[in-house]
Amino acid sequence: MNLILAMIIAVLINALVIWIVGKLNLGLTVSGYVGAIVAAIVIALLGWGIFWLLSLIGITIHGGILSAISALIVGAVVLLISDKILPGLEVEGFGGAIIAAIAIGVTAWVIWWLVALIGLPFGVG
Image (cartoon, rainbow, N blue to C red; front, side, top):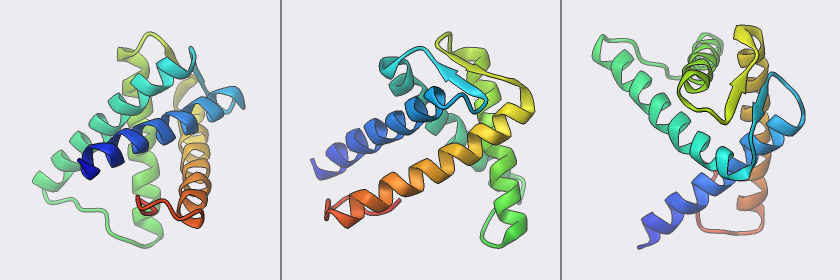
């Protein structure tokens, strides 16, 4: 039960991050909070799928600056793919996807840091 609750809270927090980034006009727009929830789920599934496929062909992303750049590019590609399959999500090209991926990463880090700070038992990701 705790795992299901943690997953629901993670989706809601990630949707909040996507919604915030969409409001900041940083290369991504979303139709509303419900659209952001759907986008959070789709982005998570696509991201997992891409990293899984990369690991199948022997590419792993572990730490360091090259890994961060690789993860950023994968994040941008995930946003571009999500833009094509979600009617409520719009990404402004690859440059917009990179900026949105950076903004999502920073915003998510801050929100998860705050969640950990107030002591919710869901970790920092």
